Length: 83
Image 1: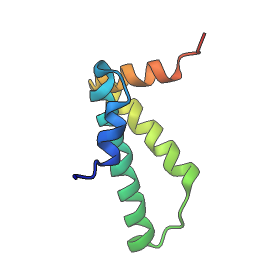
Image 2: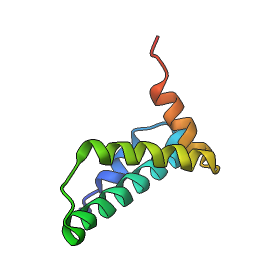
Image 3: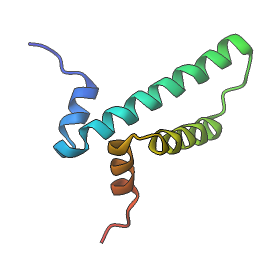
């Protein structure tokens, strides 16, 4: 039996039209965590979770500004007030 990845499981839990946006978000977050980890390891910076979260939010904004429409749609739906 093949063990399914967390990513694959996560993708299957969202509506089909939001999957590209979720893929973009997962890639963006993983990339920023990797860069943060390298800064801590190789540049001696202290780990700073609030800063990392702000960087991810800023990058999401930039990605949306340059055309990541599915990410923008995912974030808009996620942040919209629930009725």
